[in-house]
Length: 247
Image (cartoon, rainbow, N blue to C red; front, side):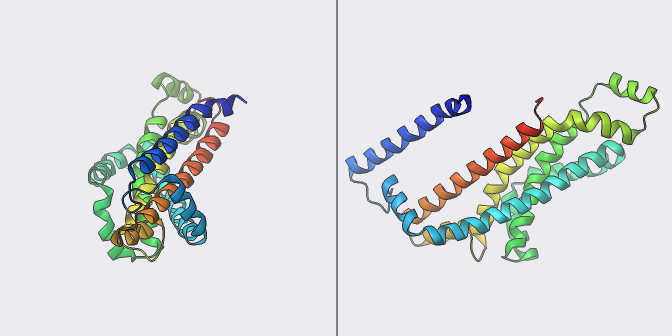
């Protein structure tokens, strides 16, 4: 009951925005190709549900695959940096340089190297996710106080034991933050990459509809992908809260 009550303000705000949107379109007679009404979008989504859902499944699959790979890379690098500090000094500047450039700039290269199929979207998503996961995991692994680490070592604990028994548990809240940030970013870059080169997917649907000035299809794809991303983000956040209950 308490969780449902916490969602009420957001649901009320969303409902008010939709009602205002509908009233503005109807009152001012705005043409659908400029701004379709929520009811028109809902009707179109119902009539084109099969095609839209097929594209959504492709986009979600690419996003989840890239998210999983990028998360694994980020966590693995953070652990390696803690165990071997010289490795961090060698690799971290390169990682920062790569991430100082907008990820979209690497999309043409990904399309050339991996083609316009699934691989290029997964690669871009993995690149996007890995850095925030790396930074947050590294911060979490380094969060234990030096006195606590020295205490462990005074009992004969080696670096690996300190990592498993102290650093990793302490890092989990930070890892969770990195995962949530990475997931939010991954959805965006996958759709953008699909817009620039893909056989199918939500991004490609948006690109084709935009070239044909098909506003209602664009809005339908945007709404559907936004709702699906919000649901997946909620699932991820819920799982993280369940397993990292002390955060």
